[in-house]
Length: 634
Ligand code: GTP
Ligand code: SPV
Ligand code: MN
Image (cartoon, rainbow, N blue to C red; front, side, top):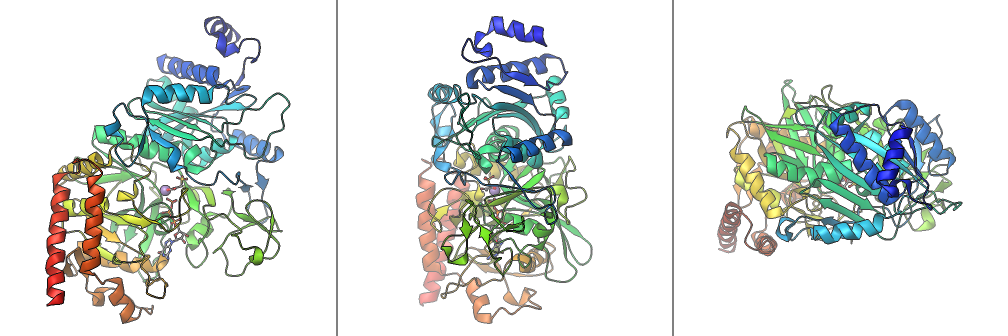
């Protein structure tokens, strides 16, 4: 060991850091050897030479190590230990008030050709961006520990799995990664044996001068989340929050993986994954893409309100989907945990999440109760007295601000979910029967509509728009395009991505391909209230969908696709006034023609790259809408 470092010092003086930067203290290097291990060590040394950490720690993924990290963070004031009587093994983190969500404006795809990033991504020229990042990362970990975090997305060594390493100077990122992914030495072993892996580097961008007092949530005003799709690398700087810092999640499992999937013939999607079991005991697998904070975690943990139905959770945010030799689509959830939205999660909306969060959970930016437990808007109807808000200030309902940040989150192991499928981490995944696309739409979009075929389904996915939520920086409620719920997460040109979906469809057996539906739980009446009760009652929509694909129920043709006969919806036990039902399914040809104009404008931003099949779908939609409009006025 000493000998190796001595050699490194002579070969590369910057590792030793010259006179001003002492050589980092290295701990827990795994004892693997081989060319893969050499390459990994060389890369760790290279990034350490650039970022100049005081220490390097190789994370082994053990329980003892995790506990040491958590204890250290409590001692350093980065985490608050919650009262174990209410919330054993759980912690509260409070972020810097300026570091509370993904920063899409500072997220870049540094592909060699600008065209490969496409109009929906920020493109950066890779050579220039590399030079810029070198300046930014130079010395960025001074005074801190650089952790080496080997991780697997999907079961370690599984046929659909991929591995990577995250270097980070944030212990919070390490403990989060340990929940969200499979972290540990068995991954390093795969690398040593020569497996391909993705390189990801994360720094909070807050170097410490000798003797400088640290802050609980270090970060920087300057932020970068940069992806190099050709070389499969990620560099993230300046933020400690969620998707900006847990690089295995959006950066790797969506942006980089979507590029790998394009090249290898599979799909990396922003989708939940569930198994729905009907009253006869037959199982169906459903994947659903909804934009950030639009209901994936909730549907993933659905408790049907109609008797006889059961749902098993497989995943709540990401699905990797691959055509199998049998002509079906097979999906895995590559993650190992949930990073879920706290506000709105309560006994009446998502009791499964509440039960999942009994302990061993890291909460970020929620409110603190005086008894050492947590609270957020929507957890209970009654607001507890003497709360401390997410920024650490005393809070009352009169404060005029939310007690928990709207993008406050919980991080918890998937295995803790009481309705997790027994085989949720099966390496081969599950065969898909249904794909749903949805968004948050106050108007126009019906509760459910069925695509007529795969190309129409891809068209529906490509036209999803949604009102903005707090999951990313931006104006709340503003309607924006979010095709396939992948706008912030597609690592390449979105028009090519649409084409890739069409290509994947072409590889499926027509009778075994999943059927595609669009749903909208969020349509509102003229008085502003939600027309549909949502949550557990969304099982009523799933019930109709499954009866549709089983051929048990007819649909009504409409210009935008197949709608249910409202009489076919199982509404037993709930009161939905007929007027609301009519409104939930009303299709106004005039406003839909306007939607079609907006789709044309959106497609036009891709400079002719949108596949002809989708342009044809748009033309057919307009034809049907024009006919419907004429019929309505005659
Ligand atoms: P990300 O983790 O950001 O990708 O979000 P997500 O899609 O998993 O969103 P999540 O399920 O956490 O839901 C976000 C918000 O939508 C929460 O406040 C929920 O209470 C609310 N929500 C979820 N499902 C429904 C529904 O059926 N109806 C209504 N009205 N609100 C819902
Ligand atoms: C989302 O924004 O879609 C999330 C949260 O799932 S984050 O991991 O921060 O991207
Ligand atoms: Mn998400």
